[in-house]
Length: 152
Image (tube, rainbow, N blue to C red; front, side, top):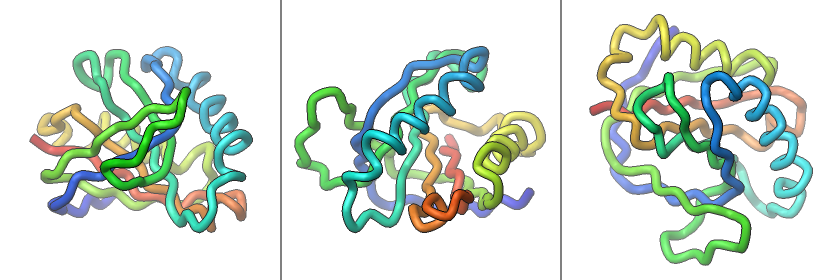
């Protein structure tokens, strides 16, 4: 799987529902979190082209608990509605992986590569990694996403 190395020159602010999970629970928790987002939040979003899934608040690395926020990009001063969370994706160096296909498999396959097969996995910074999903593909029942992994 090919990684493209990029510099993110601006902070991205994402607001959405948050989930605290662990590697042991993620296989069960994350699909339910996505279902909730699709049911409760996505229908009310107008003129949104991308949905972000942000992984943050790492306890230590990918083997420990972390928080996942699914949401949309907003301005830095946007208010946070009750029950949602603001997360900031910092500037810096990232590796970007492109993935598409079956939503239940494509993104998981990409993350498995990042955890186990990617030669630079030891350089991860564990501040905020994210996926950017095209809403147009989601409407077709498929995934067209970018997985961005922060580098130290």
